[in-house]
Image (spheres, chains in turn brown, yellow):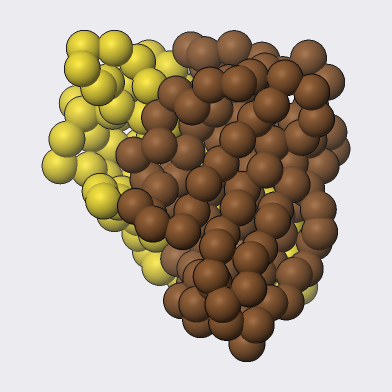
Length: 114
Length: 115
């Protein structure tokens, strides 16, 4: 997982608060993907971004969730007004270009909503 | 959303044994990937397959992209304790006539290796 940096590694939020998850892709990678993993399940696609563009957000919940990948700085996954069901591990991955899907994942952010 | 069917769900084996797991789908995939995930970490790519029928090895690991494009298997030979983890298959499908980088993951196979 070297190269894709996610922070924080663990995040605890009370119901109703906002959660901000950060992802710095590998150097030279301009494509970023966010996935969510519930306990004892596989990863589920959320959103695919390039610099300043959302390419595919078909896996994002319609409300409270948003993602961005600005020209400068990390990609941010924002969850507003968190609920207990948002508790999960959120993984970011990056790739240098479209076409090859074997991209590199970060170590994830484990969000716990209390 | 769609999820790949992966089996077995778990395996408990002795060190030195060979392991085989597979992934199936009711629809066609144009890429198959195998990842390993250890506790508290993200998935690590083991093998990527891009063509139907492709057979690829990575050390003691061998994976194949099924001819029907609806399945893939992963074999691990001569297992060792550090093979312990959860193994996920993943794949991509064509959408709107074009390739997508959106991965669909399997349900995972938990592998435990007893020394």
